[in-house]
Length: 195
Image (tube, rainbow, N blue to C red; front, top):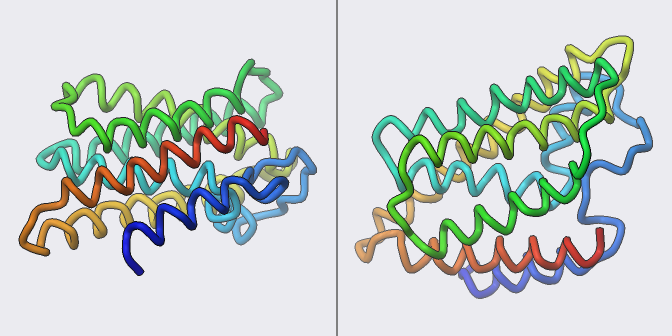
């Protein structure tokens, strides 16, 4: 599948109402398996988490591990806050904004200071984790949290592996990352209209 096809697929998927967001507020999540599947069930989570992996791999060095670690750590903190009943405003807006900004970061290929990249990843992770946590079972959130941490790590690794695969193609990953970033940012903008 080429990158134009992936971009078109992301745009089409983002335009489907009711299927784009993983967190519906229905309280349907029951444990580790559902928690694991949760990051894969909504385009907003999936794109943001893969983008973090892509950006981490593009930056290389210590950010390769520090960005995903910051995202996952803050995601756990966000889920813990949600499970205690704390309310946080504008969670959906922050999640959609994360998709748009992560896509824009891939397009720009700017030399983002590591501290800013890690802070951004942690901030986005907190909101994604909070959304995951609001759907978890109140009585037993630990299996749910463990499940979505596993799913998130797989999505980060997918982004890292994709960036490394693109780097091996001879032309370098940047043209492809810009196309992917455009698709991610476009999907985020599309999600803003249907959320």
